[in-house]
Structures are given as C-alpha cells and as structure tokens.
Image (cartoon, rainbow, N blue to C red; front, top):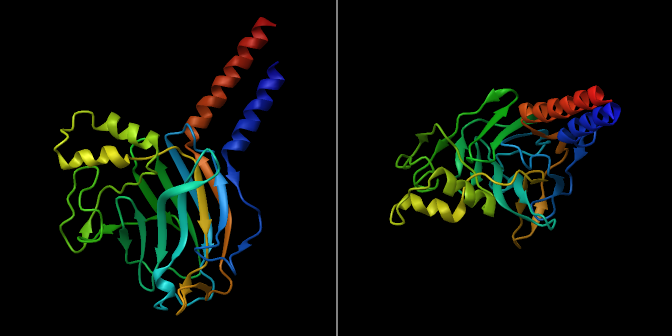
Length: 262
C-alpha cells in the first residue's frame, strides 16, 4: 500500500509540471489565425499558477508598422469541451509591448528582440498577475483612454502614463464571477465597481497558450508571416509548489498510517 501511494505522489508531481518538447518548436507559418497551441489543466484547483516559456521573435524586424500591431501569443481560457475563450493577448511593438486583458491593456516600454524567457504568475482567486522576463519583474503602466478606466482595486485611470501597483485578468467564467462576489460582497448595484460582477476576476486555472511569430495583414486583410526563425520552447504550467507539496505530504501521511495499520 505504501509503495502504491508513493507512486501516486510521484505521478501527481510529474503531472503538476507539464512541459512541451525539449527542442524548440518553429513558429514559421503560424499566425494569429493559425496558432501553435499548448493546452494545460494543471492549474485547476490551485490558487496560483506559473506559466513559463522561451519565446524567440526570430529575425522579423518588430519595428515593422504592420508586424508591430499583431499578437505574438495569447493566454486563453480552456473550456471543459475543449474550446477556448478570451483571457489575454501579448502584443510586441517596435519599442514597447503590452498585455491586453479585460482590464487592460497594460504597457511596458521595454524592447524585446531575439529569445526571452517569460514567466507569468496568475492568481486564480483574485485575478492578480505579474510577468518576469529573463528573471526581472516587469513594471507596467496604464494609459487613460486605452486601459479600462476603473480597475478591480478601485484605481481610476486618469493619466497618459499611470503607474500601477496591481494588474488584473479574468477569464470571465462562472468561477471568476463567483470570485468577484466573494471579494466584493457588499457593493451597491449603483456603484460603478459593481460592473465587476459581470466579468469577474481570476478564473479556472485551465489554459490554452496560443503562439505565433509577429505577423502582419496584407492589403487584402489576410494574415501573412513576415517572420523567419520564430520559436517557442520549454513551456511549463506549474501550480504553486506549496499546494503540490501539501498534497504530497498528505499522501505520504496516509502511507505512514497505512504502514502502521499493517
């Protein structure tokens, strides 16, 4: 019995750390209408999930007017039936990038070229997220007239370049809406903040990651690839380690009880 439970612990921990192939996946030929997809439900039931991968822009000049306006990758909600729904889109520009969510877009003036390591930290219960690139946490700002004017923490976006302490996402699922009700139970229906009940915060922890090289639309409004050598590698979707350790310790405790009974 103890051996069986130990095998369960190992299997659980292996499942928790889902990853893609060991060699880079070429994104040549992929575009926002035809993406390379990676599905994961590893974050279901976990408060915090880390999504990480290595993304290479390839040789495409991201200053190109058309290419700069298109998504490089998206994080979407993976539904139970295998379809997906809106969550967020990451857009690389020549001298900046932004992450567009229901409460965004959120902007950074950092220039991205070549291969970079991305690590998103997503809180499923309150909708907070952060992004580290190459190990450095990124500071984002909001833009009045572009970023959603009223943030879930009550911050009102009024400046052309406004620093933010918190950044939010929602997958607009029933779980996200329940999160909003739990976090803000006493909002008056006439309070502008009550609109959060309609979209929610956070989500289910099930994700579809969609990748494409920076692309552009031609004169006929058809997506074309202007990118050579774009790739993605080392995709990982990892529940908060503490959660998995607690599960592991719980199973090991059961193993210990079983051994004593035997």
